[in-house]
Length: 327
Image 1: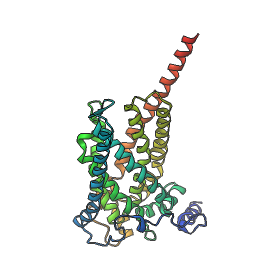
Image 2 (image 1 turned 30 degrees about the horizontal axis):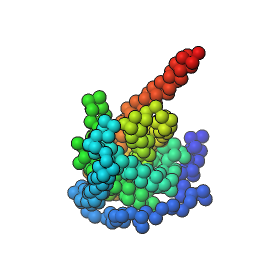
Image 3 (image 1 turned 135 degrees about the vertical axis):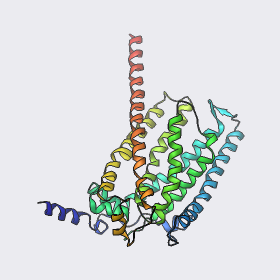
């Protein structure tokens, strides 16, 4: 019986891209990308990796900071002072620039995932061993979407760190800010290896798709700071944020974690299977770093659900109180 199940799984996953319902690529990533995503055949060293990937990211960091400066100038020209509804003008501009990044990257990352046979296979068989190996590296399908989008987001991280003084830094949110700071720095250190060596790049693409939740989180900040916390728009944005966070970052993480268990990317055995002699001696570092975002998502997920529940409960309490007053 176990042999029959294995045979069925192998048949189900072995060549998912040959199935009739798998469409051709929706996006021509090579043509769309502002930077080269085909030249990744340089020296297999960490220094060459950072020179190439960070070199691409720096241009996007400059673009991100430039967009922030433009929004600051536009707000000033519109007559807004140094503070807008209690928050600095620079912080508002930063949130607008973040919203632009999230709105660009998230849809493209989701499109990249939808057309990627390895990702489709992983979700269909819920992280089985065969699909897990494809998630580490699929030699039939280079991770072009990840190669395009990762340097852009790394540039955003660089720009965001350069604008640290414009963060909404408060004592109550000090721990969350430290986690975000750690997330940015760790991603800058680990993600270049994923696309340069074509190892676990699809897991990084999944993380880029999580910026979809960032769209609603940033919208919530804008509405809250604009004193629209009691509006229907705030409740709607909160519902979309909570729903997308739970589905994408928490439930959607389960097949990924199972896949990492079935084919650990930090394992020397898995690396040798993919490439004779392994990938790189530091490969285990950027491979095992894939687990930490899921831990952060678990921490933030509990807070997200509690926060949304608190908003809904307040709405119900206020309606009950209004009803009693009317009587």
